[in-house]
Image 1 (cartoon, one colour):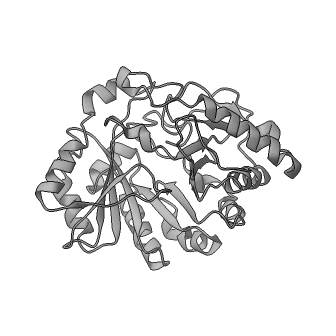
Image 2: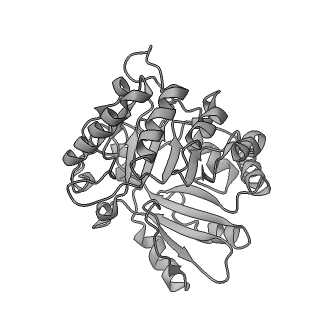
Length: 328
C-alpha cells in the first residue's frame, strides 16, 4: 500500500485517534456544561480489536505517529491495553496521548511500560483557583503531581497544552516561562478556536498567538525546525531555559499548507479536518483483518476530497460542536 497523499501533495504521517468523547472536566472553552452524549445513547466506542485494525492500516500506509485523544482517553478501562495494541505496529515510532492529567500520578508509569512515548497535558493556568474556574475541577495539584510522575517514570519531556485566552491567561507568559526554566516541559499555547457551541466565548476571549511570539522573539527565543511527523506547533527554544514554548496558530495564513494529520473519531469515522463538514465511515471495514486493503482504499479515495484549508476565518466551524467531539 502506498502512502496516504491528498490532492495537494500533502503526506500524512500522523493519526489522531479518539477513543472516547467522554470527559470528566468541564472546561469553559470545550464542555462548559459537562459531557452530554451526542446522538444515540447506545453507541459504542471503537473496540480494542477495531483500534488494532485501524492503526495497522494507517501504519502500513506510512503513518509514523499516533496520538490517542478524547474526551479523556484515560477514562477507558482498557487504556493500557490500547497503548500496547497500537505499539504492536513497528512503523509507529511515536505513540502519544493528550490527557487532562488527573490519572497520571497513579497510572503514568504503567502507560510508559505499555509503550507510550509522549504525553500532552492540558493546563490552562498555573494558579490553582483559576485552574478550578476554567476546568470545573479542583485538581490542579493532582495534575502537577502527575507531570512530576511522568518525568520520574522516564519521559524525557512533557508537553503542556494551554489554550490562549484574552483576559484569562494571555498576561501569564512570564509565570509560565519561570515554570519551565528548569523543567523539561514544552509549554504550548493554543489559540482559542471557534466551535459551534463556543461562538460567544470565542468573540470575548480570542487573541492571536502573535502576541506571545513577539514577546518571545524580543527575549531571544529561537524558532526550531519542524520534523515531518510533528504537529502544527511553532516551537521556540532559549539557551537559558530547559523547557520550550510552542505556538499553535490555526488562524495564521498557510497554517494548513503543512497539514500532515488525519483524524478518526471514537465511533470510527475518518475526519479529514478538525473543522470539516462530515466524516467518512470506516467501522464497517474494521470487522476483520482481511478487510485492510479495502479500508486503506477507502481512506486513500477520501483524501481526494480533503480541502486545501479550513474555513475558520469565515466563521465556518464545520460539524465540530466542541473539541471533545473528535479529539481536538
